[in-house]
View 1 (tube, rainbow, N blue to C red):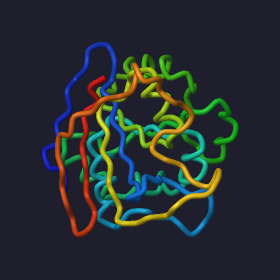
View 2 (cartoon, helix red, strand yellow):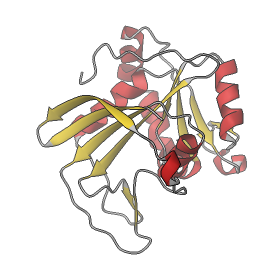
View 3 (cartoon, rainbow, N blue to C red):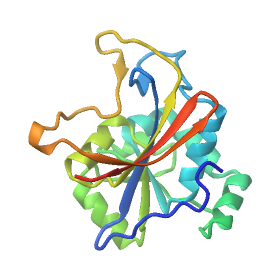
View 4 (cartoon, rainbow, N blue to C red):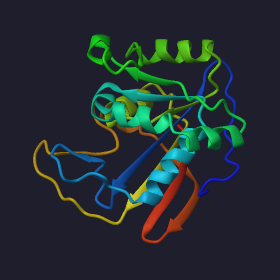
Amino acid sequence: MVYPNLKFPKISQRPFFYTNFVQTLDGKVSVLKNGYWPIGSLKDHKVLLELRAYADCLIHGSNLAFEFGERTLESLGRSEFGALRKRLGKNKNLPYFVVTSKAGKFEALKVNTVSNDIKSLTTLLFQKGFNHVLVEGGPTILGSFLKEGLMDEIFITIAPKIFGTAKNATKTLVEGILLPPEKIKNLKLLSVKKLDSEVFLRYRVLS
C-alpha cells in the first residue's frame, strides 16, 4: 500500500473531509472529449481504492456520478475491496452518495442522492455517524467544499502527461469559484511518494 496505517483526525461537530484527484503536469483533471481517460496509471487507481477503503462514506458530484457511477458501484462491490476494508477495521460496504439537485436523474443507478446544499449535507453526514468522508469530486463540488471551509486534506497524483488546453475544453482541480486574495487556501505538505514517474502528494488545508 502507498498509504499504510493512514490516520485522520476526528473533528468536533462535523466529519473530516478529504479528496483525491489525479492531474497532469499542466494541471488538467479532465478533458471534455473522449480519449484522454485515464489520466493516471494502474498504481494511481490502486491508491484511489486505498483512500476509498479508509473512508466512512464516499461522495460524488452529479457530473462525476453520471459518467462513472456504474463503474464506481461495480468497484465498491468487489470482494477484494470489501476484504481490504475489513482489514482496516471498516464495514466491508462503503456507503456511496451523489450530491445533486436532480435526484430523478439517478433513479436507474439506484444510488443514495443528497442535497447539493453543502452545509446541510455536512450536518446529515455527521448525524449518520460518518467521521471521515472522501469527496472524489468533480472540480465543481470540490470548489463548493473549499468555499465553505470544509475540505481538510487533499491527495493529488501528478501524472507525467501534458494535455494543453483550448477554450472550454479542460478542467482543473477547482471549478466554479475564484477565491478572493484574502481567502485563498494555504496548504501544508504532509508527504511525498514517488512510484515510477508519478508523484503522490498529501496536503493538509490550513485555511
